[in-house]
Image 1 (tube, rainbow, N blue to C red):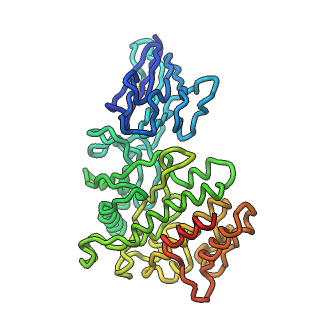
Image 2 (cartoon, rainbow, N blue to C red):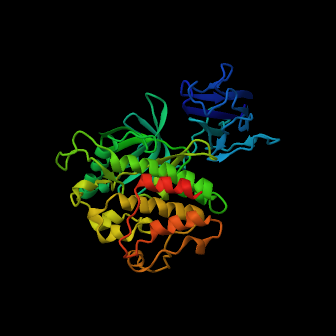
Length: 418
């Protein structure tokens, strides 16, 4: 033999484990008892015989077996009727439901018969591949405050999104304060349209927050990977789920609602709804939506107590921000989230933000001076009633005392507009 294939199975695979192949083999994956990679019975997104791996080291292939919800390679669904299996490469990731299989293929060292060490080109924290009980898989994204990794929780085998405070951010008290606020806020939230909190902690120099991993990535990534805007039906379906999560945030009550600022906030406003913070999971044709990143969330009933500066409040989200949030950022209420959710709907339908931001222009100045472009000037594919509703919510330059609908009211209006 001159090669080996390694499959690292996690998520709803029972149990999570690593399989090494040095000779040809066939491997079924699914919920059936005859599957070599067996998925938990309660993962109903997986068929009894979901997909099959054909292994002939160093080659490895996968074929979808006509599953209802599909087999995905690096986020792209395989054609169920393909005449030939899909060739996998070293580092590819195969997803079926809540199960993820990492594929690693390498030749053997002819002198020792062992697998050579190959460089891992995926970003990892400097000097470490583990943080506490988590093994880091790859980087998902980063910002000024932290880095988000796909990580495996070793005790359970679950894949989670692990947000880690960057070492340089630890030297800035306002960033540490914001990270701790996010932890305090996120750990109290329980709703199917919000990214679930798992745990938070510190180990060595790392402060971390572990949350639900959404295997479909962000709405921004989804749009970047497809040709053209979404249909009105698909875009509204995503928006209705976002509004469901926002309704929960805007109306929830907690026992410590009257406590001091250091306690968990009560009714919240997110303040940073944008495509990058709308995450997707489940089937691509009908994804489940989760709102993420509560780093700028605040209790709107205690306006002005957030401690955020104007720069921090903007956070690079100006294209999806209403004028009122810039003018009165400390006193932002639920209306700013509803505006932002509508701006995301506009973007899904047109591929453009509600305002034009010319190169070199000050984005804050654009929001303060320029009106929103009516949606039908961008595209004619939006039904008239839906276009009128969107334009009405986004027309925040109108001085006529117009009231932005609540998340619930907008959801009802969207259903009627289609």
